[in-house]
Length: 64
Image 1 (cartoon, rainbow, N blue to C red):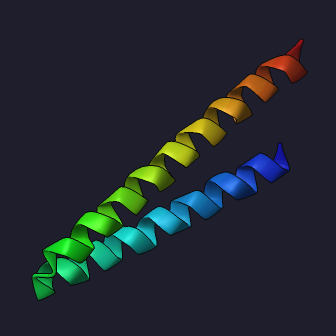
Image 2: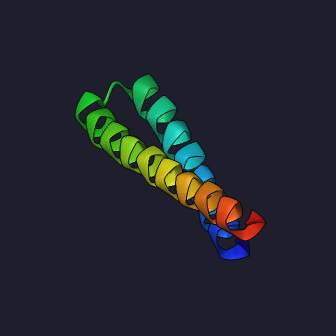
């Protein structure tokens, strides 16, 4: 479970960095780069969600 928790934390950090990048790009008006970073952010959030589901499933199995 610790491995999954570290992976989840890593995806959280990645998402936060991407959100900061998007904010900076927004100020610069670089809409093409914003689109690319938004896709990366979506992928990071999807990866985190998958890891969280895996973590929950593992927790349920360990409780049995």
